[in-house]
Image 1 (spheres, rainbow, N blue to C red):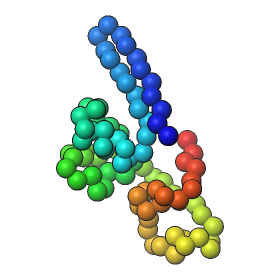
Image 2 (image 1 turned 135 degrees about the vertical axis):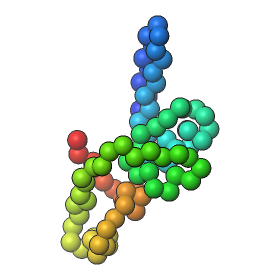
Image 3 (image 1 turned 90 degrees about the horizontal axis):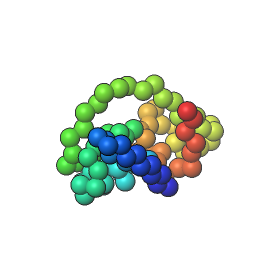
Length: 87
């Protein structure tokens, strides 16, 4: 799902697009946007990634879920799973 918002002020043009990390990276590669903020910067080949914050995050799942046996997970590993991200 992609969400877009446009703001036009005399000296500023701002377009906010909310999408997944892969889609944002593709928009940068296509020069459709100037920069993006993504939660999973690993594996962004061909792009410069500057980390500016560390987020303490946890993944909660049922004990019988196949990924529950992993010692560590990345966002890309859980990207295809059904999930809810809280604010």
